[in-house]
Amino acid sequence: MLADFFYSIGTQILRALDKAGDFAVLSFRAICAVFRRPFDWANLLRQFAAVGVNSLPVVVLTSLAVSAVFAVQLAFGFRQFQAEGLASQVEGLAVTRELSPVITGLMMSGRVGSAMAAELGTMQVTEQIDALECLATDPVHYLFVPRLIAAAIMLPLLTAISIMVGYWGGYLILVTGEGQSAAVYAEEFFRLLIWRDAGIAMIKAFVFGIIIALVGCWRGYRTEGGAEGVGNAPTSSVVISSLWILISDFFLTKMLLV
Amino acid sequence: MAVINHEKSVIDVVDLSKAFGPKVVLSNVNLRVHEGESLAVLGGSGTGKTVLLRNIMGLLTPDSGHVIVDGKTVHKLSRDELFETRKKIGMCFQMAALFDSMTVEENIAFSLKRHTNMTRSEIGFRVDECLSMVGMRDTQKLKPIELSGGMKRRVGFARAIALKPKILLFDEPTTGLDPVMTDVIGRIILGLKIELGVTSITITHDLKSAFNIADRIALLFRGECIACETPEAFQKNPHPVVQQFLGGDADGPFLQDPPPPKRALSKT
Image 1 (cartoon, rainbow over the protein chains, first blue to last red):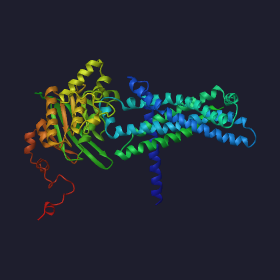
Image 2 (image 1 turned 135 degrees about the vertical axis):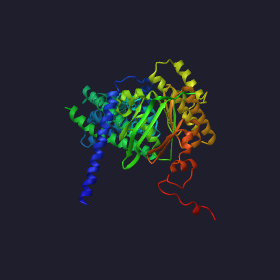
Image 3 (image 1 turned 90 degrees about the vertical axis):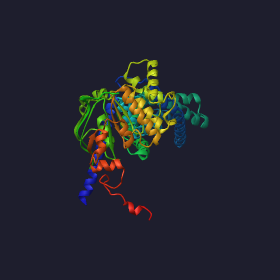
Image 4 (image 1 turned 120 degrees about the vertical axis):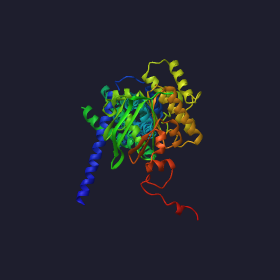
């Protein structure tokens, strides 16, 4: 009874370590492969479109919604002690430092990471990845690298757009709704910010992009067992990458925000 | 007609064993394929035929034993050397495994674009040549989803021969096709063999095409190779499993679990 219990715990731990090791090895191979010839420009451009351009509507809408609702809460909160003027300062701080990078990261892990996992998973179960191997092409090089580069470049750009949209989301509520002056809002929004904050947001987004692409590709590449496996790959990719985005966000904030 | 060079073996499978967990799929399989020879590997479902091919391609690592392709031990090669060896092998998958996001033309041109310095027009010409070899001219712009099963296989063949490989491996090229298409595929394989003079291994459980295309026939049974000889000798092989396979009878040593007796099924 007790032996069974320890046995099952041991198996779970070993399986988790096995997965972590597998992920580490594949990630290392993918990062090394970035610098290897031949470079597939056509594929990279396609990924730029898939990761970046096609994600614009989602990023714009979610950033608008989140920044607007945050402004509503701030306006309400600061009204309690007659400090409405502070709402726009805190809005600027929150949008730039946390909301935009994290919301963009989470949305992209749902939109892009899951698509990568599903696409590679389908390729795996229909033997297309084996076919790549047989055509003397390294699947890690051919499939992972364009996705990794596209996500690492596009996530910071999307985050920048998200910050801009966040500015207008706050404007919508605090200026149009609460009747603050537009000129004051424009000044107050940036009052607590320095350029370093924008840099931190970009670094966060860059790291999130790498997490999304590597986890999505890894889950897809390791898909087994037909339709059910293909169904599980995007789910586990979204869960794992969202978790790591939130965890790494905490540590990045702790490390960078001195 | 392709000439078989009996002096030189291109593929050497030596004492190959492979198990997945407790299930032993291949045990001590020995096969030798000479240059220019065409070998058909027969066997029931789940007897490790595909696993054999995957070991030859280096997609799986054997538990013991080894495979020598063109003088090199496959599972001991570095990744770059392995890719160099794979360029000499054309692999045709059971379900064709075409890249479904690409057109037929892009599928066939894939390895040409990556591994040769051919110009765009040279590649176009070679794609055309490969397609006409498998009787699929003027399908360049179609997507794999628009093709039938037999057409997909043939495009798969065209993709496999694009780099002019020395070795062709066919994984159940006729499974799931109607008898006429089965014969068409058989003739294409025979045609490729004669035109290109390649060494080939064809995995199948279709006896007719096996006898048509093979110089030698091997039979896998419970992970072991129990016969490997010319079609004539194979037909006369007294081994009960061979005779049962040739006769296509459910009663005999071939199946692990005995089938329901005939009498119980027939209406009396």
